[in-house]
Length: 413
Image (cartoon, rainbow, N blue to C red):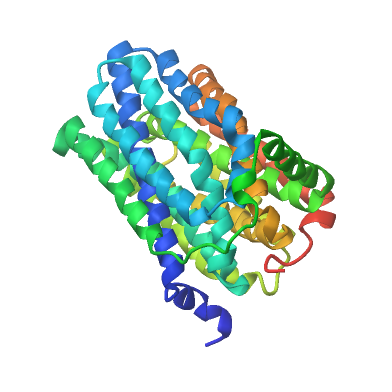
């Protein structure tokens, strides 16, 4: 057995990685369970889709206010401590939802403060990974993080419905809070960060300077900027598909929403896992650009197939296969680029770069999340899926003709 076949086996023996991964699992599943809970509560209280869209806006505002400075804080303070504290505080914020479930604007406040704290969690987790995982295992580690993130969007929404049915709103909120306390306990046992001299002497001007350093680095280094833009685009795509999923399952496939996990979510996760398992070996012989191009073609093909399924015979079986294709395609795009960003960014700038990426990600998601549902309602979900497929084909053509200088190196370099 070759060394690259041992990547996942060796990675799963890395106890520090397991601790960080468990924290991410608890955090990601919880946030999507609570998204489902708040979404259903807001709609039940208002019966307004516009009111629901304000929930996404409440989650985006913290990125606009704090996102530019979060990476600087991560780089200058203990990342382990930030992970612990944010998880504990988020557990408290979620617990407060028990007392405001009848007040729409207070539910928005819960979303706001949760995402305010999350501005510190994401860059802390990403910046901690290269310290805890050897360089040769970064692709596998990023693949598992991606798999968790992808699965959490769909499974978290699915679990939200199941938990509300079985345990009711109170039980669901308590379970979500407990999950975040488990996330905090998991990272508590990580090794302490190395001392950062002068970390306690930071003021606003220094934070602003650090933000400018991260911004200038991204602006001046296309080898990092374009991959980050591709990462952001892939996550926007995932978010838009998540918004369209319930309507697609019901109107196109003609299924009850409870069947969405078996039809689309599980096959998508299996496709992502299969691609993630193969990527460490493929990255040894293929350029990052080639892997990304294949991912874009597969994703575009999958979306175009989904757009044509309404009248297709055996459409359920085709949907299962296509969901697997899409899961593998997203992994093929995201995992190599994630590894490229980590390997090409100086270690002392990891927090600032990931803070910038998180800021841009949430900023870029606001409009598509709100507008995509509107366009899908006007044109139909099937047609909108086709439009998304054509957009990905355009991205493929761009990378094919303009990506040589940025994505030409192999993804582990």
